[in-house]
Image (cartoon, rainbow, N blue to C red):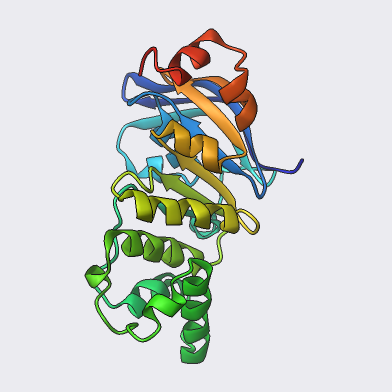
Length: 251
């Protein structure tokens, strides 16, 4: 199976605090990988290493290798801007810009130099179509994005991410602020998107990890305790700590 990321002996420190401890794992192309574990165990920190967003935090130090398509992302002269175009991010709370629906989606392509109006129109239609929103909003493209419901705002943020044609989508608890109906729509969408994209999702919701992911990684105290196919993790985990977490004995 083709890997997208290969992570070896990854350690990350915030000042003197070690947030990630010797993490080894692979993330596979066109698969959904769920990161589970109690609060503060390093899941979101790990997610941010995959598009180098931790670079923006003062006092962060990283050791080990993170390879993306076989190249060391933390090597000298690595193009971080190109990386962030290929590895998009969707956050916990929907965060549309205070602009129109249209302007939200063309924001990224414009930053990357696309000025042609008919091309931008096509990008908007394609991105909204991919998140199953085109029919809902095609007559409201010039209306404020903040007028959308929470679930629609989150799908818009996913569309904004898709507009720059990434290869990977990172999601940090993308449904934790949404109601069950909106959550179900996002989960359905993830399965459709995995045909084209590699997806890594941090989730506190174990049922969600079980429903949507192909692979699951269990984090505890900055370490990866176990990574395997999701059905194995949930039905026959190799480590007692994984079993205890999944059965609700802690966390």
